[in-house]
Amino acid sequence: MSGSGRTSTVSPRWPGSGSEPVWSPSHRLRWAAAAAAGGDVKKTTHPVKAILAGGLAGGIEICITYPTEYVKTQLQLDEQSKIPRYKGVIDCVQLTVRDYGVKGLYRGLSSLIYGSIPKSAVRFGMFEYLNNRMVDEKGMLTMQRSFLCGLGAGMAEAVLVVCPMETIKVKFIHDQSSPNPKYYGFFHGVREIVRERGLRGTYQGLTATILKQGSNQAIRFFVMTSLRNWYKGNDPNKRINPFITAAFGATAGAASVFGNTPLDVVKTRMQGLQSSKYENTLDCAYQILKNEGLFAFYKGTVPRLARVCLDVAIVFVIYEEVVKLLNRF
Image 1 (cartoon, rainbow, N blue to C red):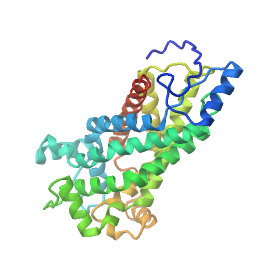
Image 2: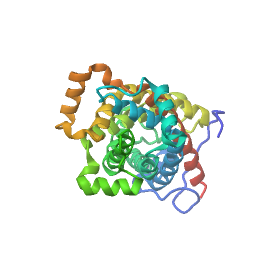
Image 3: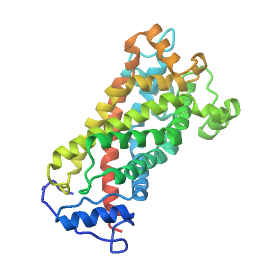
Image 4: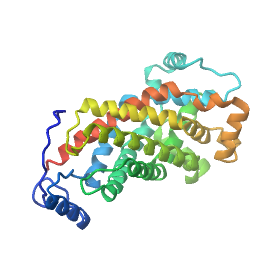
């Protein structure tokens, strides 16, 4: 992939003619209209390819960035203690390594590995599904429509994957800080959570998770689309260098952190082992504000910022490169 900016006219290819996915009649009409007008057409990504590429990107990303997620969650949960254990990010890392070794920073990783692959698959699959129905005749997506596509993708991943995955992850991490941990692994932990609380127990904080994931992806895809449209200008087929994609992704990730960290804090509290003391999501937010102050809504922002910027940059780069590879077949 190069950033040469050369304009290339893509001629229509019908299903079966090469590397193109099987498109719906609406896609064929867009191709025909654009070809008749002599305009350039940006190829859309079939949702199935988006699912495969998104799943692979999500699995690779979480293995790289998980320690920052662990530290962020510990700091958010630590705020509930009468006597906080950690003084900050560095202190949390040092104490965790001292007590549990480096592998302690990866406690709960299994729950995210099992969840990150389907989460990213659902996210990108749903986004491309909505995108393919909202793009214009040149395959361009407006910023407003990208916001709606991202919102839909975030809500879908929240309900189907993120809420149960995050509930299990938070309970694992919270359990480790207890005097007598009771979970001995992913499957044992899941079995115990379901036995004690039922399947409903894996959907604690669903409302907060939908709000968080929906706003997360709405912000990220909005910023990403805005930056892409700005970079491409009047050439929808202009290629974007992977390093530029990474920079755009990191920017989109930072925007989502500052935009919805309060929702992330509420979600984490609603999924922790002490979630029973909150009546609902609104009550949780109220108690945090009343007892801990406004600053508590941004607890863990620094490690989350580091993780999310790296996360989004990696995911978007891997996703786009895998999609290009799949389009060759």
